[in-house]
Image 1 (spheres, rainbow, N blue to C red):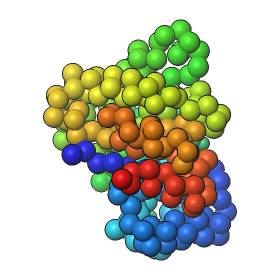
Image 2 (cartoon, rainbow, N blue to C red):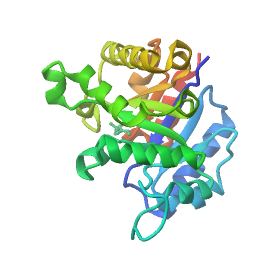
Image 3 (cartoon, rainbow, N blue to C red):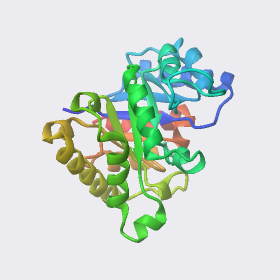
Image 4 (cartoon, rainbow, N blue to C red):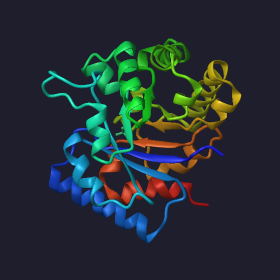
Length: 253
Ligand code: 13P
C-alpha cells in the first residue's frame, strides 16, 4: 500500500516565534489524536532547526520549501540541500508553481535541485500543474507530462522511490477554487499512467500523488476518497492548526 500524506506548505508566512507556536500546536494535536497518515510541515528555512527540535517525528515530519541548485560555495543567500538535511528536515518541496513563475525555475534547474536533494538523503515533494489558460485549451496533460519528464525522467527507479508528486493546478492555488474530485482523479490517474510507462507499474502503484489547491477540511474527504489521490499539499489551511488537523482527519474512517 502506498503512503498517504498530508503536507503543509507554509510559504512565506510566520515569524520564527509564530512558526514555533504553530508547529507546537500541530504536534500536540497529533500526539493527542494519532494521525492515520504521514503528516509533514514544510516551513521557511529559518524555522527548520527550531521546529526540528520540538516535533515528535513519530507523528510529524519536517520539510523545507526549496533548496539550491548548487551543492555549495559562493552563492550568496542560497541554502543547499545538505544544509536543509543538517537541520533534521526529511523532505523538500521542489518545483512549486510559485517558484517556477516568480523565480524562473526551469525543468533543467529543477532537475539539478532534485538530484542534489536526493543525493543528500532528502525526500522530494515535486509539484506539477497547469495554469488556467493551459487547462482551458485542453493542454493540461501535455504540460504535466513535460514537467515530469523534464526534471524526473533521468532518475533511476530506486531514486524515484524517494519522490512524492503533488498535482497543483495553478488556477486552484490560493483562489478558493478547488479542482473537483473528478478533475483531480482524472489528472492523478494520468500521472500514474505516465509514471508506469517510464518506471513500470510497480513503481507507479507505489508512488504517492498529492493534490494541492484550496484544499480545506470541508473538501478533503471527497478528494482523498478518489483512488489515485493519496493526500494533499496544503497552503493556506496549513497555517491554522485546527484546519490542518481537520484535513489530516479526512483520512480517518
Ligand atoms: P492553497 O492551499 O493556499 O491553495 O495552496 C496550495 C499550495 O500551493 C500548496 O503548495
